[in-house]
Length: 299
Image (cartoon, rainbow, N blue to C red; front, side, top):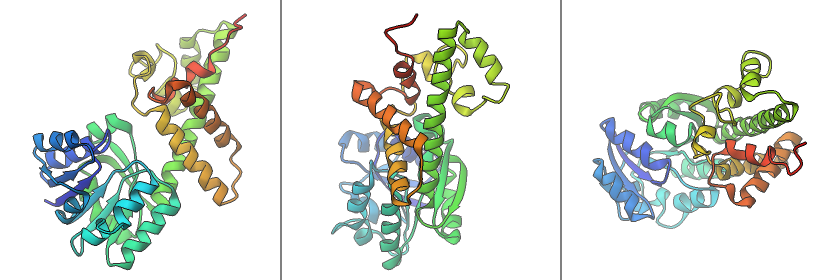
């Protein structure tokens, strides 16, 4: 089993680290929130007093951080991971960040002799808790093979997306599809309501015909048709609207950098910005139905 330093024990990182402990790995964790570290030790992990101490404790170092600036800082600053990790350690960043940062940090790691992967995840907090995440992994094939046994303790689907940064590229492209399709499903159900078509009837038809998509059949944004969807729990989050907005912004940043036209992605980002600005950032992203379906003139 591996010795692992885990940095970032938030909503996603905490259950991921706990699953590594459950799988028999020795995990030393650090987070800026002391209670998060205490929660890991209660599950059998070890505590580190700093990111540097966690990095030095493992043959594998995993990070799950909020955004690109934090990743650059934790890896590249004086006393950061590249300065503190054991020689030969495998570095895996599971944060969702911009492609440019992922490639820059991977290049810096390679320059001082470390193997590194970007491995963002899909599946939300529930997937992290049940070790059923999907990992989209960027980096050299040999490094990917080295990481697979560790990633398998946290996820069900592990896909090599290509060179460094391609894991992040896959993540933001996938979530742009998800954000756009969720809005389309919300619009269709809103229109159906105004036309007098029951939501269950539309679901029964579209889920078996050309309108079928994951946002409809697995995560239907209106209460009723899919009992497990957040719509039936007052949009308690699996994946928050604020996180969807973050990913859509990253996609728009990448689109701008590559001169790629993504008009639907841009529209989705604008709608989620309105939703989050209205105070709904903590709701599930499917809760955008409340914005799209809202009208003061239902005639």
